[in-house]
Length: 433
Image (cartoon, rainbow, N blue to C red; front, side, top):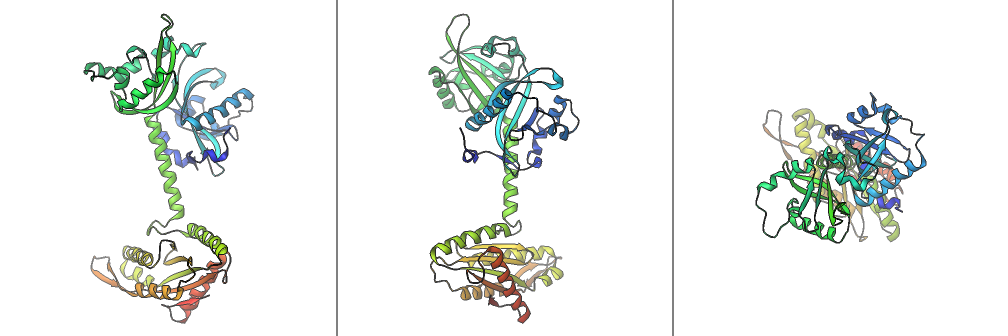
């Protein structure tokens, strides 16, 4: 059984905005929340499938009549998808109370701030698998499925392919077979991967893996399911290959992951300067406090407010102001080390966190160097693109952990008050709390 720590590799979908790209996929997609046993989201094709008009109707759909067996299978599918990455299975659904058997591709994810266990169901069509799924190869249904189904001998020679497979790979028959390669292998973008899967089939090691395949439409990402079976007429062992094109789903998931990464970066870093934001600064302070407690060391927090920045914005425009802020960020980085954190917490306010790892840092000297660096005029371009020099300064309040505060909020307040004392007494200097 998996524990919560086993889910760290799963994609986290914080909100419906993370999966907006799924609406671009024409096939049915819905997302199921296991922990509340209900739908979390569905695209327009899913709403049409269930005969609904609005997403909220799907989310509110009453599933209390589901059997314990159905709930258990859903949970088993989640853990199978956690282990395998993707699954492909027939499922019976009851839209309008009538049974319909669907081929569903499942991917395990985590949902919302609570990180509920979730399953993305990616459905291409309805099929009739018959009473025995092992007879899929010879069932009439495979003629009408978009899943490419091919049977091979254990030597990699094709025996049978359905129309979907012929459409994807028929073009290969017009090309000469590379020497020493089988039909099975040459469908793979990497023939070495195909050779390895064929060896697995010969060893009767069934399973699913994703591969890049050379199809008529170009290189596509497929989940390739390989099963060893017996030919119903000859009794010989054969390899049954089912391929499901997951390129669109893979791309949509990548976009969702990228959106999630971007949101995390926005939450932790300042978009203009790339410096740490307030939330990340507080996290870094707590980390530094923990080290200081263990080593009887100090941590200095510098609260920096720029002098004269408003005049730059007013006289030369916001583009010039942004250039000044980015220059300040770079100069502060140059005056700090790799163990330090430089942050921007809004407007013209900056934070610098300085752990005293060696217990010998001269915080007064560091503050003085920063003020000298920021005193150097900054070349800017005015609104009419005339080169100008911007003159700013800095008022710095310094608070030391643990003497001036023992929490991030306490130290921030102490440093802020020290900074305002400098503002009132003449600016462009520093003061300790």
